[in-house]
Image 1: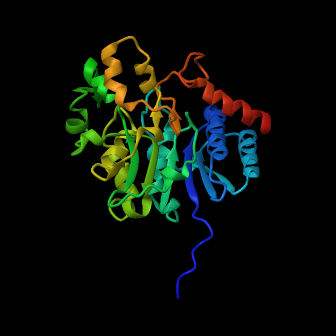
Image 2 (image 1 turned 90 degrees about the vertical axis):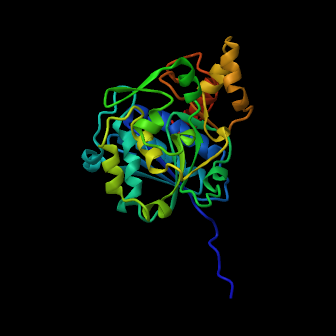
Image 3 (image 1 turned 180 degrees about the horizontal axis):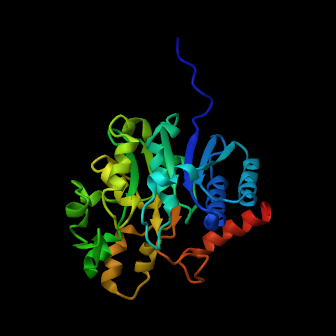
Length: 298
């Protein structure tokens, strides 16, 4: 007798944010839901410690889109376990996703983590469903190393400078440094990775050094040699079109192969964001979703 299959396979999503980023989180989530497969169920986890009731209420209104379940998970009582000097650019909330490796989220076998400074322009279930094979994660390579290597910018760990070309090998100990990925869009097979490493071991890696890229470095250590590279349209970091628009011919050549006309996910990397820069590339896409979201869920 053939087993009866579930009516739908959920798309499990995870964000981590604070009150300061609540509106950007709302815009990102709204863009996901506007372009979703309406036949699928979307289970959304939002890890936080200080998102206000007002902001939560506004975001929860999006459940009216249908087939969407949103939960806010307070991490305040657990924060000391991932307390870390993240510097001025990052916030401690980014470390909350490391709890996904532990018992708190043991019922989740697969999850797609998304940063809040991005906009989704297509059906994200295509990325969520990616075939991992023997890998434990799927992500897009962090191609900014192309430029960093060219300008010979030093990268620091524990205040010790490394040449950008050997940071991934000498500092992080990676065996596949060419596959260093941007962790802002990350599919994880949690069931598979939990069989190999515990949450405690992940936390030990976090506290071992003062990393330049914080938990992104930690995740690259955890998934070293076990990550599937996916096309950059699934995490189109805005420094790519910014470099392609420069007058410097060599810079354009450096990133020419990465041009994508219709990326599925636009990720506003760097400190310059659409909400603090009128000239940010693809900034109009962000404001399109945010303004529509605010009109609909004022």
